[in-house]
Length: 180
Image (cartoon, rainbow, N blue to C red; front, side):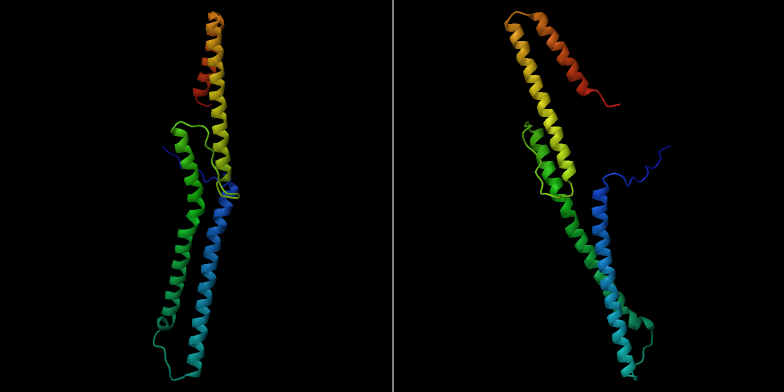
């Protein structure tokens, strides 16, 4: 039976906090603007009704309809702003990381992920760069062992070449083993 994973709020706390504050900020601004619109319409209708006593409301919805529609409009505008601008803070860095990884897949271990300071995925880009550095060192190590094996074979020392080959094969095999 599949169990549902627990919500883990301890992973990437800073990123989660950043995202939560952005969403909460937009919701708070929308609520404040909606409250101001409600106050404006409620005060406006009360004053008009008070001074112009001959105006009568048949239904409360006549008074609240403009307020509700204004609140919906403000909420839609806030949601649209959140939908347009918040993903850009994430999509840009993700695009840079993806572009770098495509260049790596094409055969080069030289590219590095470059993000602006304080980008939301700065830690991830540092981890990708660290992984690329590790891979580059492993390739350099392989080239060095290959050079040592070639030198041993040129010198006619097949035993040394075999030992180097065996040791390096074990190192490469270790890289392919799954983590425990």
